[in-house]
Length: 224
Ligand code: ADE
Image 1 (cartoon, rainbow, N blue to C red):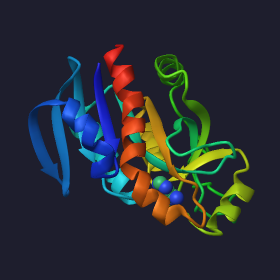
Image 2: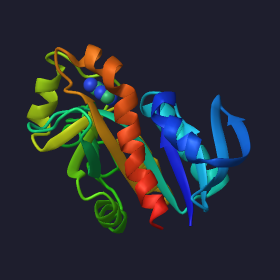
Image 3: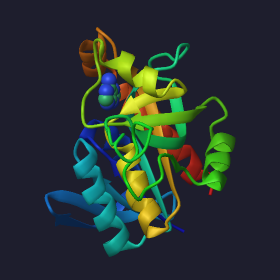
Image 4: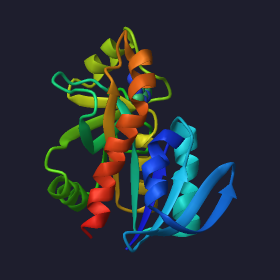
């Protein structure tokens, strides 16, 4: 099995890169693709950059050029659900865009014409990741092109009351993997609460959250 991994930021990639015995590296569209093995499994690791367009580009290139069997997106997120704490790990069972308003075409915020409202992570992968990481929480993760802080959170929680966490790439990775027909999963760990203190909390806990999310993946790959 060949595993394609996308992380938005260097801090979120660090532990994964350290675990990768890299045999080659390519620069495509300003993104770095490192190929090698992790615990003896074939892996391609790329840092997409932040936001939906960066994530979509990385996922398209990854799938077309390197043809992984699965795609995993890992990184930090802002917590939306009550009871979530800094460092908590979240496995996205499904994903949606929180910043798409095409209500001309359909009633639901997040709807992109011709696409599903929700992208489902592969059910078998979700079960396998849960087994490898029983403490991780599972649920809806929403994505958009803004760092969510202050009162921005209210609108998102109103539109997606069951959303556990918010980030800026997962639904884009999901959309492109869905279009290619390749199983995917999105993993996150909480760096902030997407509220008034979000900026300071993100700066303080980005690395820790990136590591916690990467740990979900490292545990899974080690167990393969
Ligand atoms: N990633 C981590 N924290 C986030 C936030 N508050 N908003 C968007 N993406 C994030």
